[in-house]
Image 1: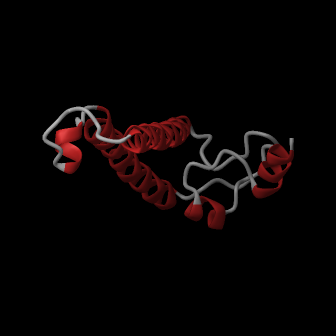
Image 2: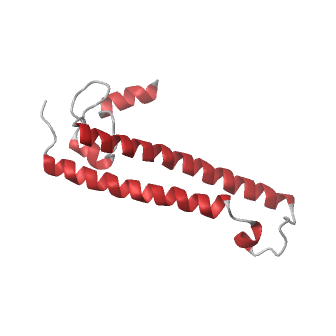
Length: 126
């Protein structure tokens, strides 16, 4: 099996580090903006009590949506961390399911990919 060139590995590592920094910032920013926000900060209400029941529903929806986004970004962050570890241990770019080299086009699109397209499709069908 041919290995990924050192220059390509460095490029992927830089992209993964930049993605990790962005994701860490996004998760922190979302947590600060939504979870610590009170109603007076959000829409200019003078009272901390909503005037209408729909306001409570809107606030709850916004908070749940943000928590869902944060969870998704934290999952992606874990994939990025794992990819950085694989670069360090020399297994980056190898499909974890079948052991073949993951095509460069796939790594360009998803630098934290752990499987080749065929194995990823089979995994998603399960």
